[in-house]
Image 1 (cartoon, rainbow, N blue to C red):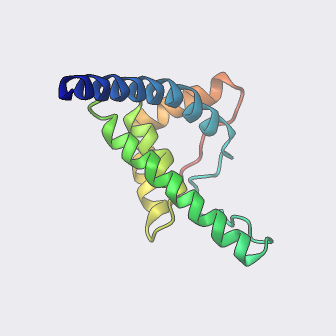
Image 2 (image 1 turned 135 degrees about the horizontal axis):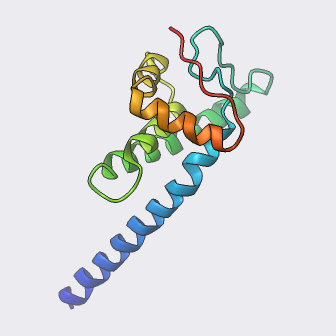
Length: 134
């Protein structure tokens, strides 16, 4: 009985790993292409749902933080599992709300390999490159 459970657990984890890998190959580029070019620019404030009802905004903010935390954990796992670990962690960080978030995002995106890869992806979809200013 325990052999069957351990085999089933391995198959489930393998399936989740493959689904996560394929999901990040689709979701992350889709999001990175749709972000405005000034998303990482400190001079442009980000006001999310500013004109919505406070209760709706609080609920959606909570959901956004939970999804961001899941993406962050998945990105950390993808550092050793198949997938786009750094980009998934960046997506998770961008969804979370915490002090110093924008400077941490800029630190990750300003790395030459990361910025070049993201801007090359944006170029393929005829989007302007990200501007990164302090």
